[in-house]
Image (cartoon, rainbow, N blue to C red; front, side, top):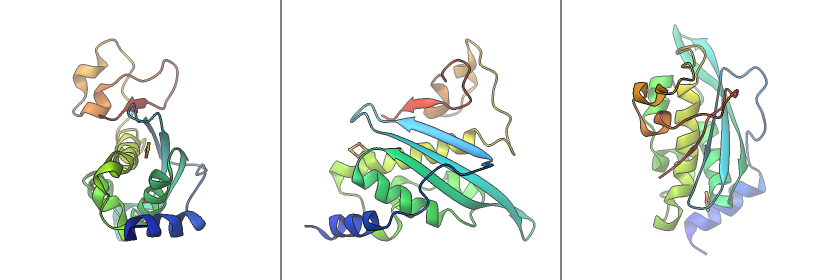
Length: 161
Ligand code: FES
């Protein structure tokens, strides 16, 4: 077993921050068309030293062990980060102490990255959710936000390339 897989197993023995976060400021959901897995992330912000930073992050995964382990690490390392700092974290950076994602597992990390980005785009404290219109995709600055959301829902389910 590789060092990465060993660390994944150790993280899975006690995954952190699993489950819905009450009164979350933002929630994001993504699905991977590659494997059918899904991940949802909740973010709760607080004010610290005059900055709005992530106080808590949590997740629910309907996915593989790697995605769960990365989400566990990511939700820990997001604490104290501003939305701007969180927005630029890559899948590889979100793995924290797990180390670099092996090539076959990169999309698992991207599932976590996608859920985080989607949550930040839905952050009620910063940007009001865009109206659901036929051409709302043209307003979107990113691939994730260019994909449509289900009618009537506040959560978008988007594929990750
Ligand atoms: Fe689907 Fe890992 S195999 S996210």
